[in-house]
Length: 136
Image (cartoon, rainbow, N blue to C red; front, side, top):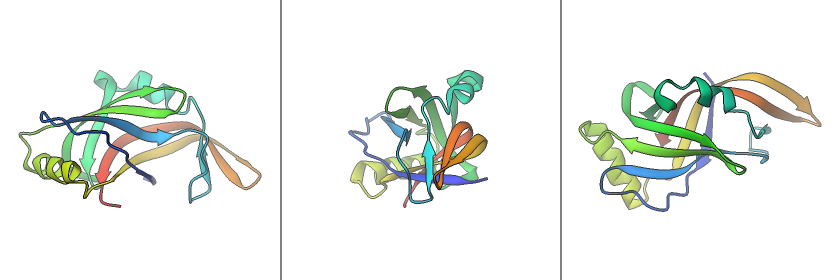
């Protein structure tokens, strides 16, 4: 499963383990030469069971740490994260997010519809499997 990493600008991590930010932004060519188009996550959002995807620690499917509720706006894929504070790895993630050591989010996805245009891969539809809190 391919992944994409994004610098995560967290405004604040609340005491209950919730935070908000963007899991992906639109119309920006990343270092891998990909551009996510607006609407790429629409189907994933519609099909998300309960409106969320799992939040994992470092893309490890054996280490879920919470939920990421999804919504698209003009800027990108906005998420409200809820760390499951009863999970010890979520407590560690919370402490690292709060201290600013962890600064990244990454997505695990499959490109459903894509098109090459002038050397840039335009991701038109993305199936999102998970979002991860990552070190880099």
